[in-house]
Length: 470
Image 1: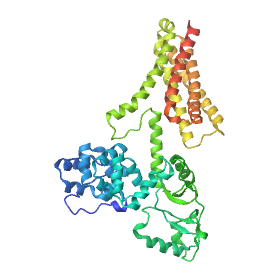
Image 2: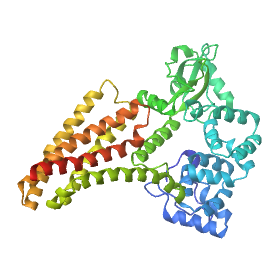
Image 3: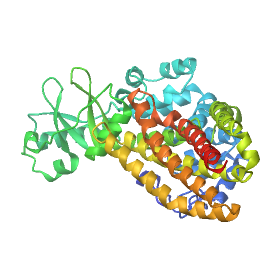
Image 4: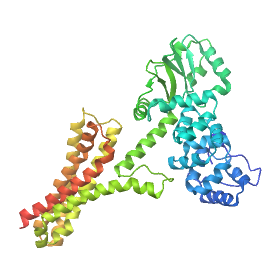
């Protein structure tokens, strides 16, 4: 097992520590989960604590996803406050909401004091209004003020994301002054920090000194000689934009400033990793027309999230059926068309989804903008044409031999080439257009692309068949 230093397992010294929690893939083993379930069923709190106390908080959160609601509540009762505190931010949203409803507010208040302000604010945000008031009222004034200040910023903004704990030094200090100041902070030090931010008399960041560089330098060296330019983040910037800045400039941390340019917090790379994963997860789910779901989601919540998109798909399917009904006489005379036409629409739909996925990703990573949109469109169009010219002979020959009619092979081959061109067109233009209109291109693009390729796939194939074969 590999954990951080604070979570390294101790050598077995009691009957409760004879377990192997993680497999070689860093996933919880079924045997360990079963032991936890058995201990919860028996109400054996001491054994539960022995099983859980050496787990990393992320593994405890993962464990919660494998347990039923009843077992989760038993486990939570036996988590030490510090482990409960570190576990809460790691939980799936649905599970965290359930846990917060069951844990006494005094226990939550004690646990939240163990967290950095950004993590504490993220947990408090999930609480109901009355519970939030009770928990905050039970916390020391300094901690309460930090959380309330974070919650005052817009959701998914840098102000909500940042932690208010950071290390700063005036520009006239040297290395020795800074090191002595850091050592004097003791427990007041941020749990995680990588840079000392150098500030002017108005508390505006003018540079940063990486800790590694600070420790390698002589005590008499002024900070002004060591500091490097910093990428300032404003409190109102969207978290997705912050993640883009971190990724582009390979940042580990960045100072956050208010409207006056004063240093008010910092964002660190561990928060950005979570944001990137969250944004990617949302985009993937939206492309599939699925709401944000996790292991704690109920059947009702899942159905409520999926039914609207299925209803929209039902409506688009009716459009395709209307096209087919328009060519009913053609299909009655050439029954083979009924067998072959799904092939054209299916290939077109898959090709459209490929172009759509690539385009949505390029928009999200800002690799696609107005400067290269035309070039990207023509590239995808040429790719669609090339795919059509490769696949059309294959399906054309196969269909011609099967139907014993060369004309049918020519019709389906031509229809496939044309539909792949349409698929490339809508796969690129749909997300670009939605983005220009300030809509999320990942939300509704897939439905529109599939509907378009189905509609035109049936229309082109059956239309050509009517013209050529009848």
